[in-house]
Length: 366
Length: 210
Image (tube, rainbow over all chains, first blue to last red; front, top):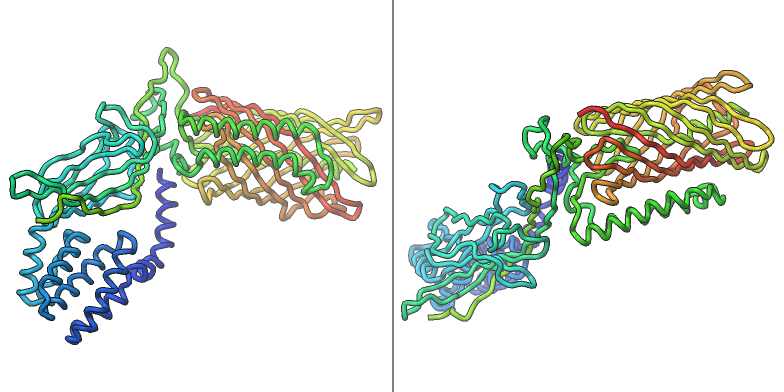
């Protein structure tokens, strides 16, 4: 586990040097800044054109540009307001609230008339921001995937877990979430409605925002969909008095850091098929026919790779860390204790966050 | 000739890097078949069983592997030719990635043949990669190694020492035993013409320790 974190940290460190510049370009920060400069110079016509273009660009960019989009839309709304176009200003502010529910205009930058209008729009625009770790591992029953929900205004939401080919799997939360900077935490323990751990596959978290209708009912107005990829890895741990907890075994087994994800089923087969290189080595290196017995080794390596492919596709084997070549391999768990049998535990779930989408629903409007 | 043979035996024996979690010590054995292909002397095959022991210890990304084997390789056929071989090595490895290890260390080779007793020391540098083929049971590996310096017995007529190999290791979850099969080819060039050494390596080991 330590090695995996160290490796990941090294990659993050190497990438972080270029991330800020790359992210700024993707979100069109330069465009937004140009529009803001025009606004501050009271060139409202130019500011409107620049900010409209910048907001559209940022909206179509990655979800990570929500803050920049909201910023552009806020200045755009202010430009509309100063141009005596309050309806357009309200629409711009509404878009800003939907993009970034926690966004608030700077009271030092905008006059009270604009901040008050923004607040009025925000109170009647239910919207939710969803924050989730990029990757979460659930190895114990007390571990959960934490979804942080931040609302633009207090309203009712329904948080459901959906499977790609099944539909709704489980309702994670249904009720009110308050407005403000403090997030509402919705957790998922990796289990379905029947209490069983979910299988590997693609899932979605649907967060539906409701508004109260004049008839006293609730109507869905918009939805945030977060894609998840779940990789379930079963593991068997043999009880041993030398281990204080199964985590020790898991930590040991994962010290090489490649327990999940890296070696896919295709990778296993490819590695095995590369064993066929054995056959070609003499031709590549020596240009000779070579020892015939090497065909046996090549066949064994290729067959092992194909068997591994079949087993991985069936999802029935655990992913052990790769063992270094010619290694005295260490089983991922200690030798079985006489008189005791191996006890299966819950599968380990690796949950990776995917794309986030926003969509309006039919319940929108007065 | 025996010196050349001994030198080639050195490369025929695979670099037994055996890092594991923690510590281990155990016996191991290997059947080694060496095929010498030379346009000058023709094709010759020598084979034999080498027995020995090996140990390793690892901490974080560092691994230290020590092993020793001895035995006799013989040439089959009407002309009897053979040599008693003793080989030992110590490899210090650094895992640069979870599946790549860079190793370096000395390898000592001693041969006793009719021509006399000879000893050589080579410094090896190599890298190895590994992958689980059947998780928990079978792991595949590939390695490349070369000698960067040496002393003692030096087959002066041979240069460009290096070798590559692949194989697999079979483990039994819950039992401290493992089996390994591998193929390795080493190539040398020299004034008397290129020579290639192929090795089919089988090993069976027992792990002792935590």
